[in-house]
Every structure is written in C-alpha cells, then in structure tokens.
Amino acid sequence: MPQSERHALVLGGGTMGVGIIAMFLGGGWKVDVVSRSASTRDGLPAATSRALKAMGKPDDVSGLATYATLEEAPWPKIDIVVETVTEDLALKQKIFADLERLSREAPGPRIVWMIRGDDIGKAFGGGANDALAARGELGSAVAEIIRQGRIEVRTSFRVSHIAETRDGLRIGAGSPTDGPAVLADELIVATGFRPDLSYLSELRLALDPALDCPPLLAPLIDPNEHSCGTVRPHGARELSQPEPGFYLAGMKSYGRAPTFLMLTGYEQVRSIAAELAGDHEAARKVELVLPETGVCSASRPADGASGCCGGPPVRDETACCAKDEVAKESGKSGCGCSGTRAA
Image (tube, rainbow, N blue to C red):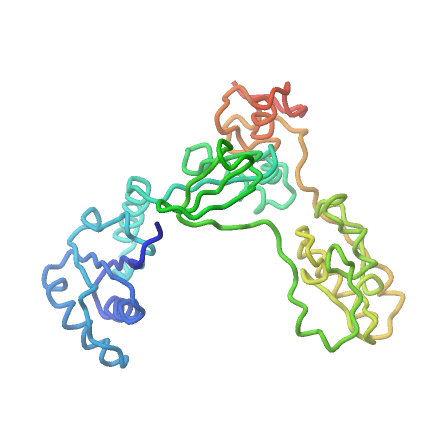
C-alpha cells in the first residue's frame, strides 16, 4: 500500500543542506542525509533544530537520519533526492553517476502501463521521422525504458471494475472473476481532459457539445479525423464567440481535443490581433504549415535508437519497430511499413 510517510534524501549537510533539511522536516517528511564528514553528521541534529526554531516550527528532529555513504541510505523509501554538495564538478559527476546506478539497483515501485488499444507504438510518436524532434526523442526514450523492462505494458486492457482489497486496488478488465487484473497501490488515470470555462459563465459562449471548443473549429480538429499535423489553418473567424470581441485561443480553444500545437496557437493569436486591430484581410489570411507526426516510410537506423513507427521494438528482435512488433504479436504479418531491421 502507499507509504504513510515520505522520505527525502539530502546530499550534504552544509548551510544550504541544513535549511533544506529543516524545510522537509517542518513539512512532515522523514529526511535521510548523506555526508562524508563525521563531524557534519554529528552536528546536524543541533543545527537543524536551530533552523526549525528560526522557521517557527517545532524543533523535532526525530525524523532525521544520517549516513556516511549513498549505499547506506534506505533507497526503497526515497521519494526525492536533493544535492547540496560543494561546487566541485568532478565530485558532482561522481555523485550523479552513483545516483543513477543506485536508483536502478534499488527495489522500487513496479509501473504497469495499461492502454485500451492494441498498439503501444502510437504513444511513441514518430521516432526519428517525427518533424517535432523533441516529441520524437521523448517517444524513443519511453520505448527504450519499456525495452529495458522498467515499465510493464498491458495492451487491450479495458478497465471494467476497480475493487479495494487488503493488498491494494484490484483493477480488472472483462469478467470480475477470471478476467485480467492488475493489483496496484496507486492508479494514475490519463484518459483525457476538458477545459475549465467556469470563470466565463457570465459571457455568451458557443461551444461544440462533444469537444467543448468553438463550433466552427470542431470539425477541423476532431481527433477521430485529424492528428495535430493535419489541422487546417484557422483564425479569428473560427475562434470568435457570440460575446462581442471575445475569442477562445490556445489550448483552451481545442477543448477536449488533445492535438494542440504551439505553432497553431501563434497563428491563432496573430489572426485575432489583426481582427481586433481592424485589419480583417490579414485576419482572414491564415498561413500555417504544421509538422507531420512521423510516418512508416524510413529504414530503421542501425543503432536501434529510433524506429519508423514509435521507436525500437521492445521484445521481438525481428521486428523493425514497436508498431511492427505489436502487429506481429496480434497475428498480423507486420505494421505494413517499408522499414527494414538492421542486421
């Protein structure tokens, strides 16, 4: 079950370290401190007590524990690490290398990613072919984490019931008796969103009933028909509201559609500004070239860092990409792309 207390690991017990330790203790956290100096470790309780008093907090330091090395710290309990050591580049590099190693070695929470669809590759973006480079890199990084087994993926998992048991939440799909289920301490739901328009209740608004966006914009951004790269240019005309001089712009203008891009927002604002300034011709002349999301038309790089459809395969080394792997596991011949697996 979820921990009843939270642990912070603070590296270093100098002036900055003491202040941070006091902040965590004052907030009800347990604090584990690593310092190579025995005298620093011995003096921390008194120094932290003084810092708590200065903050107007009870000077209770019973939640403070000190260690000489990183390896001694209670890693399975750690929620956050704060580094406060001296400005020594070589020392910091060694610390971060040790932190990365220990965080991977320490037994921690098991993450299970459950999706309703059968294609996890869609979540990885376009990999190397994604015109939004940062999105492609993020997708490839997630695919690599899954490949390493640090996240377990359950596809075609349509949650039908959730039951609270002594061992945690039983999240089930299908039959409550013999259907697939996951036992979890915490459930994070990422199944959509809607804009908060409550503060506009005194204004005259017109919204599409399905997407909560301006009605003229709805058919242009419907996620059932469009990706973020296929939205047609639009501006003040599509974003206007019955309230005179009022427009919805940016991500809020997309309502519940998850495909908004900043490039779209920039052009929306330019068009609205032109309309408000009286330059109606400039407002109507909306020019927008959006990046493609990545397509299945490129060979897979030899280094395997990215793939044609959502990054590298996770389990099947014969697959050319993540999407190809999922397709083969479901009995299909592949994803249909022209990518080829490097030898």
